[in-house]
Amino acid sequence: MTNEALKDFIVTCAPGATFTESKQMVVAIIPQNDFFTLVKKLKESATTAFDFLVSLTGVDFNPSLGVVYHLESSELKHIVCLKTSTDDRINPILDSITSLYPAAELQEREVFDLFGVRFNNHPDMRRLFLDDEWVGYPLRKDYVDTVNIIDLIK
Amino acid sequence: MVDADITEKKDTVEEYLINMGPQHPSTHGVLRLVVNLRGEIVKDLKPHCGYIHRGIEKMAERNTYTQIIHLTDRLDYLSAHMNNEAVCLLVEGALEVEVPERAKYIRTIISELSRLASHQLWWCVMGMDLGALTTFFYGLRDREHILDIFEENCGGRLIQSYNCPGGVMYDIKPTFQQKVKECLAYFKTKLPEYEDLLSGNVIFQQRTKNTGLITKEEAIAYGMTGPSGRGSGFSCDVRKKNPYSAYDKVTFNEILRTEGDSLARYKVRMDEMRESMSIIEQLIDNIPEGDFAAKMKPIIKLPVGEYYQRVEACRGEFGVYVESRGEKNPYRIKFRSPNFANLSALDYMSRGEKIADLVAIMSSLDLVIPDIDR
View 1 (spheres, each protein chain N blue to C red):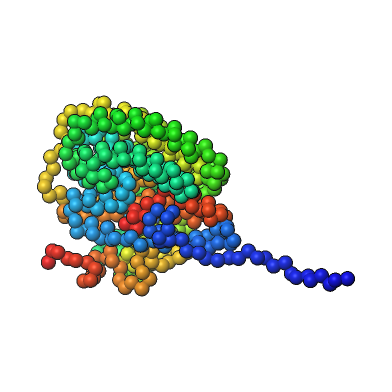
View 2: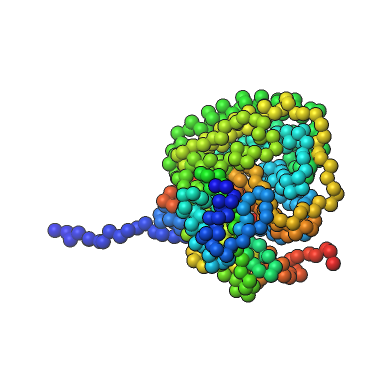
């Protein structure tokens, strides 16, 4: 599918989608409410057939917290990048895509561990790398830890 | 008449949780698995990660791109050169720098030598996990030849940091080509010995055939790439899909098998060793003259935007995602680690298998734990 056709498909399913310029692939910013239905359609529709979740990345967009998904189709060989975010930093919640891509289960746990973003309908929402008693979310930009992080540039 | 003592026949098979790791000879690193067993059959297992979590992604946010290359070495240390190459290719693609042909050839030859060394280590450890200790010594002995070449040319046996944005750090030594050819000639006599020793062994085949089954659709759903995914028929070789460096100048086969069991993954890696040798042979005599690196500015700043670069590491697709806001440090860098995706499929693959087969499945997946934890 060409980039233009893919953009049209995305806008049809998620009317609030916006696009950013990127030379490599289509990058779409999707509002949180339409996200799960869009991904479901991208996976199940025969014209797009995105069955391979390449990477799931948590990002602190400052001031919002979000996730960047890279999806690829093993048959049709195209790749798309989707971003979604939430402005709530106290209790950020997004929708999980584990029911569509089992690969997302551990990845979403990592995003929760490092950014604090919870995912609805996740089978096992708990920290992955850090202790259960750890306070704070290290990869956020406002994370302060004077014990473990040595700041040489003062 | 004796009254027979009729006792109810109780089901004596117990269910229990056992803990494998983090210190365990066959988990290949610090991975802890909590396995739910019914007798000897695995019902499910949960991996506990984080024993070697070093916060590399957070560290990288305060490092320059050239310093990040040294961090990527320590992720999947058996494909250190390919990890370095991914970051370099990302920087070069973003700045639209043309890498000289000589550097591309050198990078590809060293990548394929890394792949060969990594698969040799995988083979020797797979045999050892299943009890065949001899394979351990054979594999490590033969791998030393490749590590000697790395030490002489790149400065490090396991962790090279030989790539830099624009090319490679220094030129190859004059003896490089001859040593690589000798090494390949030597290994060609040894690979049939490996097949004789392990592949045809009846016990090995019975422990790996039809265990750890995963279909192609499930492999794609779990994101299993690399030789593990190709053992189920998922055609995911980045060298074929998005060729980089000198891979568009060589012809090689992508090894695919459809059975999806541990033996298929084993055979894929054995054949990949032959393909690696064939790629090196096609390139080793034709290294073009020229510069070994393009001139780059001392401070590298990527234009604002986001970039994704993928390479075929020894265990699957290694990806680097960078969001840059114009500084000399990345705003966010993420390493898409192949072992992380392969680990998420371990639970699915091992349900219903015996615990001894779980060891065979884990070694056929070839996990390297620092890559999972980053």
